[in-house]
Image (cartoon, rainbow, N blue to C red; front, side, top):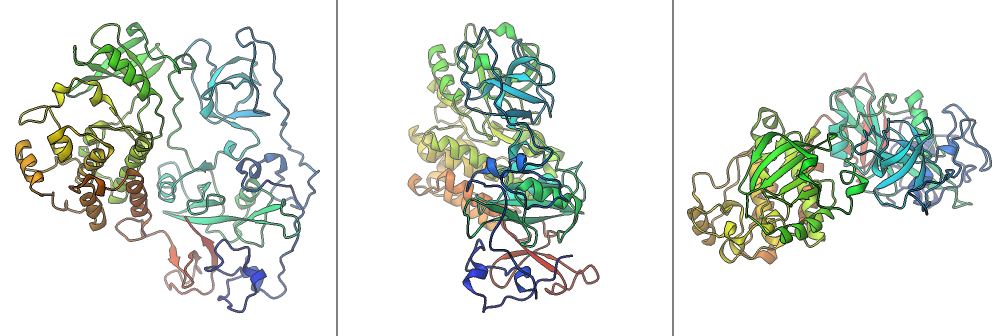
Length: 592
């Protein structure tokens, strides 16, 4: 059992605190203050390159949780994974394969082949990479079957990497970790490891304890005599040569955590392959005969939207454009630009069909439909404010990406954001407004123009910029916090134009946090140059999500502020769970 923490001692020397991530606000290590406890000055272990996340996850140095951690750099555990370079065999369609990735790869997700020269993958299968010359699709050989074909790169991880572990979630926000761990299928002891938000070179362990989630900082420290030797720890009493060994230990031992680790957190979603197939990465036009339209799932001012099947294998969404609504050459040119945009919160444009009208736009399919309809549904009404703001932050992230690429949406609204499983949100129709002839976007009363979402300079002078998108995002925020209420309730378009030009702004929606309304007002600044950037909006919304006020956070999470400024998880004495006093318990420092 770990010893109880002792109050901070201001007489500590620099050597005692020098390895704390925050030298000015530290929680002294219990082990340093216990009589007779010592921390060795030197490490004996496997050399790890500083900041190299693939190295820290190297399973070639992964011993059993009960083994001694002090083996030399030349020693290897018995379960050492073969890390030899994949053997390349001749392939008539690949005369000069480029091999820059060594070792074998493991399938992180299942994949069902979409075209003849794809390769089916089952999660956990091992592959040799024969050609990685393409950035998104690799030509591979399955070790167990000998079959070869193309597989999506984002479904693979090197077998010796940290990413190959089922419990490793990489870049994941604290609030998202809490949400994931409380989804059905996860229970007491479920856990995940993620990159720390506040210290990107460190990691956090998130653990579900009954109906709450605890977060622990996984820190690292180099040897004082050999800067290439590194250890990872939550408590300094228990250093490990890598993250896997640390996790293995806590799977078997509680050792001061809220509970012993159980099963890895279930992944609610997995990444979509980039493009429909390797054959279509640089190809935009596909034949209509490859598309089978199914049920109609939506209709807008540009046309209808259908759930469809491509190549008899893959579910897609197809937007049909009204005849003569745009020029084929302009449409293809814009589609080429849109297809190069890739972000987790943007809908993927797969291909187009322009040989005959109506034109088709083929995109990825989102199961929950538009954000507007979702918010108005019983499932949407069940979302709390924290979840709503988290969804808004994801939309802002996608718009910040468009902003960085100097791309304008022109029609940002809840109807043009799509929802998938587990509250995944993706922006749709970015750039589509520019494809359509200008007559669709004449600002006058009765026109099919989204007046209520449009900035004054865009409505009055057709001046569309990223700052006019910021205005629209402010309106979108009102839709989100009101569960799909139409903006400017009780006002028609012409009245909205007059009132907004005169300085009117919508009042704070019912239940909207004041800080969020302040952000809306900033988005609606009359001077477009005074509106925040999407990068700023994204940052502030994430701050709202991380706010520990009851309005934004699950108050059950047992996290407190220590007088010295650090956040700590208080693992309190079970016989006195409500005292709130820092006595007879263990303090392990944590952070986002």
